[in-house]
Length: 147
Image 1 (cartoon, helix red, strand yellow):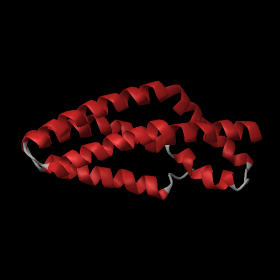
Image 2 (cartoon, one colour):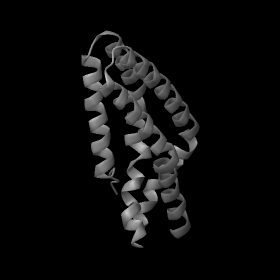
Image 3 (cartoon, one colour):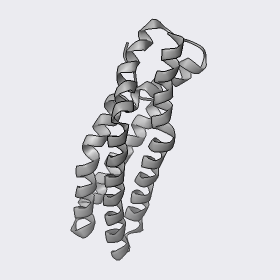
Protein backbone atom coordinates (compact mmCIF):
# COMPACT_ATOMS: atom_id res chain seq x y z
CA UNK A 1 0.00 0.00 0.00
CA UNK A 2 1.29 3.45 -0.87
CA UNK A 3 0.96 6.22 1.67
CA UNK A 4 0.65 9.74 0.29
CA UNK A 5 1.55 12.96 2.03
CA UNK A 6 -1.62 15.09 2.24
CA UNK A 7 -1.58 17.57 -0.63
CA UNK A 8 -1.69 20.71 1.56
CA UNK A 9 1.48 19.59 3.34
CA UNK A 10 3.21 18.70 0.08
CA UNK A 11 2.31 22.08 -1.40
CA UNK A 12 3.52 23.87 1.72
CA UNK A 13 6.92 22.14 1.50
CA UNK A 14 7.18 23.05 -2.19
CA UNK A 15 6.34 26.69 -1.42
CA UNK A 16 8.93 26.84 1.34
CA UNK A 17 11.55 25.48 -1.07
CA UNK A 18 10.58 28.07 -3.68
CA UNK A 19 10.77 30.90 -1.15
CA UNK A 20 14.12 29.66 0.12
CA UNK A 21 15.44 29.80 -3.44
CA UNK A 22 14.41 33.48 -3.54
CA UNK A 23 16.27 34.08 -0.27
CA UNK A 24 19.44 32.55 -1.69
CA UNK A 25 19.11 34.58 -4.92
CA UNK A 26 19.03 37.77 -2.82
CA UNK A 27 22.78 37.37 -2.43
CA UNK A 28 24.97 39.02 0.16
CA UNK A 29 24.53 38.19 3.83
CA UNK A 30 20.90 37.21 3.26
CA UNK A 31 21.84 34.78 0.49
CA UNK A 32 24.60 33.25 2.58
CA UNK A 33 22.25 32.81 5.53
CA UNK A 34 19.74 31.26 3.12
CA UNK A 35 22.35 28.80 1.89
CA UNK A 36 22.93 27.69 5.47
CA UNK A 37 19.20 27.24 6.01
CA UNK A 38 19.05 25.16 2.81
CA UNK A 39 22.02 23.08 3.92
CA UNK A 40 20.46 22.10 7.26
CA UNK A 41 16.92 21.87 5.89
CA UNK A 42 17.38 19.65 2.84
CA UNK A 43 18.07 16.29 4.48
CA UNK A 44 15.47 17.03 7.13
CA UNK A 45 12.75 17.62 4.51
CA UNK A 46 13.75 14.37 2.80
CA UNK A 47 13.28 12.45 6.05
CA UNK A 48 9.91 14.06 6.63
CA UNK A 49 8.73 13.19 3.16
CA UNK A 50 10.06 9.65 3.47
CA UNK A 51 8.52 8.61 6.80
CA UNK A 52 7.13 11.43 8.96
CA UNK A 53 4.41 12.89 6.75
CA UNK A 54 3.04 10.00 4.63
CA UNK A 55 1.22 8.38 7.60
CA UNK A 56 -0.88 11.54 7.82
CA UNK A 57 -2.47 10.58 4.52
CA UNK A 58 -4.42 7.94 6.44
CA UNK A 59 -6.04 10.37 8.89
CA UNK A 60 -9.23 11.07 6.96
CA UNK A 61 -9.73 7.38 6.13
CA UNK A 62 -9.12 6.32 9.73
CA UNK A 63 -11.47 9.03 11.00
CA UNK A 64 -14.19 7.43 8.86
CA UNK A 65 -13.52 4.09 10.53
CA UNK A 66 -12.00 2.51 7.45
CA UNK A 67 -9.17 0.17 8.34
CA UNK A 68 -7.56 -2.41 6.08
CA UNK A 69 -4.89 -5.01 6.83
CA UNK A 70 -2.53 -3.31 4.35
CA UNK A 71 -2.37 -0.28 6.63
CA UNK A 72 -0.08 -2.22 8.93
CA UNK A 73 2.72 -1.34 6.50
CA UNK A 74 2.59 2.26 7.77
CA UNK A 75 4.05 1.03 11.06
CA UNK A 76 7.48 0.91 9.41
CA UNK A 77 7.22 4.67 9.00
CA UNK A 78 5.64 5.51 12.35
CA UNK A 79 8.04 3.26 14.25
CA UNK A 80 10.95 4.92 12.48
CA UNK A 81 9.56 8.37 13.28
CA UNK A 82 9.22 7.38 16.92
CA UNK A 83 12.80 6.11 17.03
CA UNK A 84 14.23 9.13 15.21
CA UNK A 85 12.03 11.81 16.80
CA UNK A 86 14.76 13.10 19.14
CA UNK A 87 17.05 13.58 16.13
CA UNK A 88 14.28 15.23 14.12
CA UNK A 89 13.66 17.69 16.97
CA UNK A 90 17.39 18.36 17.25
CA UNK A 91 17.46 19.13 13.53
CA UNK A 92 14.60 21.58 14.06
CA UNK A 93 16.67 23.42 16.66
CA UNK A 94 19.56 23.70 14.18
CA UNK A 95 17.18 24.89 11.45
CA UNK A 96 15.66 27.50 13.78
CA UNK A 97 19.16 28.74 14.68
CA UNK A 98 19.96 29.14 10.98
CA UNK A 99 16.65 30.97 10.53
CA UNK A 100 17.56 33.34 13.37
CA UNK A 101 20.77 34.22 11.51
CA UNK A 102 18.70 34.81 8.36
CA UNK A 103 16.33 37.04 10.33
CA UNK A 104 19.26 39.09 11.65
CA UNK A 105 20.72 39.53 8.16
CA UNK A 106 17.34 40.46 6.69
CA UNK A 107 16.62 42.99 9.43
CA UNK A 108 20.01 44.64 8.91
CA UNK A 109 19.14 45.11 5.24
CA UNK A 110 15.51 46.00 6.01
CA UNK A 111 14.25 43.12 3.83
CA UNK A 112 11.08 42.29 5.73
CA UNK A 113 9.85 39.67 3.26
CA UNK A 114 12.83 37.51 4.24
CA UNK A 115 12.12 38.09 7.93
CA UNK A 116 8.57 36.94 7.23
CA UNK A 117 9.88 33.83 5.46
CA UNK A 118 12.08 32.95 8.46
CA UNK A 119 9.14 33.42 10.82
CA UNK A 120 6.92 31.30 8.56
CA UNK A 121 9.43 28.44 8.41
CA UNK A 122 9.98 28.61 12.18
CA UNK A 123 6.22 28.33 12.70
CA UNK A 124 6.15 25.42 10.25
CA UNK A 125 8.70 23.59 12.39
CA UNK A 126 6.59 24.26 15.52
CA UNK A 127 3.50 22.93 13.75
CA UNK A 128 5.36 19.76 12.90
CA UNK A 129 6.56 19.33 16.47
CA UNK A 130 3.23 20.05 18.15
CA UNK A 131 0.74 18.68 15.60
CA UNK A 132 2.05 16.73 12.63
CA UNK A 133 4.62 14.42 14.24
CA UNK A 134 2.30 13.54 17.15
CA UNK A 135 -0.55 12.91 14.71
CA UNK A 136 1.64 10.61 12.61
CA UNK A 137 2.65 8.71 15.74
CA UNK A 138 -1.00 8.39 16.74
CA UNK A 139 -1.81 6.94 13.32
CA UNK A 140 0.67 4.16 14.06
CA UNK A 141 -0.61 3.57 17.59
CA UNK A 142 -4.22 3.50 16.39
CA UNK A 143 -3.46 0.99 13.67
CA UNK A 144 -1.60 -1.19 16.19
CA UNK A 145 -4.72 -1.25 18.35
CA UNK A 146 -7.11 -1.97 15.49
CA UNK A 147 -5.23 -4.54 13.42
